[in-house]
Length: 593
DNA sequence: GTTGAGTTGGCCGA
DNA sequence: TCGGCCAACTCAAC
Figure 1: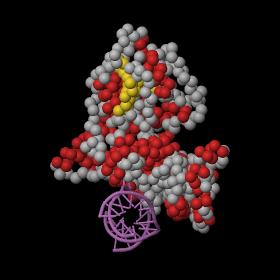
Figure 2: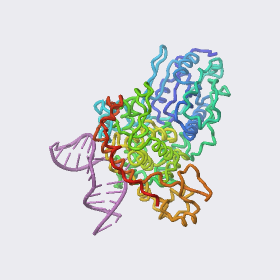
Figure 3: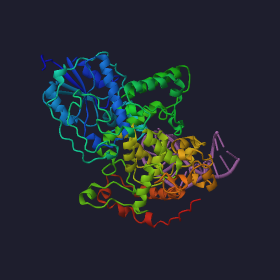
Figure 4: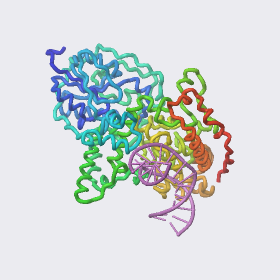
């Protein structure tokens, strides 16, 4: 039982800030000078079923939580991160009552929490350089759709610079004593495992979550085993945690040439061990690194270089520019709202007659079949999509990237460009929404606003419109990595191929294929046959597909529909697209060489 | 109305 | 390695 009635009992809700440094919300919570302070993560067991999160991202999250918990304990031996196993909507009211909470404080996000009688709710922006809502309001209330708009709008906020980082706490107040924290009698609400989007990654399909305090009754950070994710499916070499993030950042900051000269388009998508970019994006996602600390640490280096007359790269290709792009996507998401992550009902996204479209709300309601595009039959597009997802398209550059994505949960930004263009406007003509779902599951740095924004960019449905600039699955990789080291690493069956054929192994003479220990045949559904190791033939003639896609994009742009147009919602868009695509004469498929 | 710029294309010829 | 061209998008500045 709680012996006294303290004036301030603060529940700090960690959500998008798994860190102690530069957290404006945490800072504000401690400024209240609470007698009792409880830093909480509400862990929603439903999330394991209803969200697309692959094993690599799960582990990254848990590592962030463990690191944060350890940091709390270092500041106060009685403290830790208290992980409550229940969805916040139902957990928080229970906690207010059980712990006598007077204040709840958390970092502002797009969703809001209703004020409850007797509890003061405080939110502080801390996830982005600028408050997305403010950015939008300074952009005339409109979604931020270009870098020019972001720079202009940001210039009108305060002094035009992001806020300076706040101090990390040097001490943390106590939580309740052991008995005061006990929630033993409180039952967790029932967990429904339907729909189940992550069945493949789970150890047990009937995993039950009944203990709001966790299996040991101590609010400990869950293990992969507890949340039912197969740890053997974790294959990423990248690790989570604030201490990891700060160490990585400090390492780059020491390298003033790297910081000052960084230009994203000049960093290679084919580099590995080490990769050419910082790989700090997952830390920005989980909040194990503050984006404002990143910004100001970089800025300090660039200021020093400027003083000694050394050249600095400029926005938008330099490091601060990269962080501004993140704010642009958050601003667009904030303005559009929930419809931002899909086509239907989204005013900023172009409607294109892709294959494998999402169903419209009307179609779902009336049980109509999924929209099918008419340029090729949809079973072919479905096959292309699966082969893309699994890294067996027969184009080594694309397959290597997709295999890196699956193994490591991360690929370079330009690699994402390559595979996204290939799936959508520059190859398969499959809806960007299908690709975004795959990235959502596999990326350890998956951030909805950025992922969706980048897929729109690459598919030329928003942010970018020059659809005639198409990435070649052969030339683009070759430009960065003529020896094919990246392909040899992630498609080891091709490791012995001469560099002359490494991007186009189907052109290698059969005698050479035999000599190099891998025959190019089949569709990739098997990695061996009676001849031994095999690598798939390309799933289509790329030049032919590029021409078809370009023509179809031209037509779609000519029609000019957007996600919120009536014709899109009621399905009558098909009339506007007319006969062009399916009646267009098509070249005969070239025979494989 | 025109013009030029836009984070990151490919190809050919000099 | 570089520049010009391909066939052509949008938006802001003028």
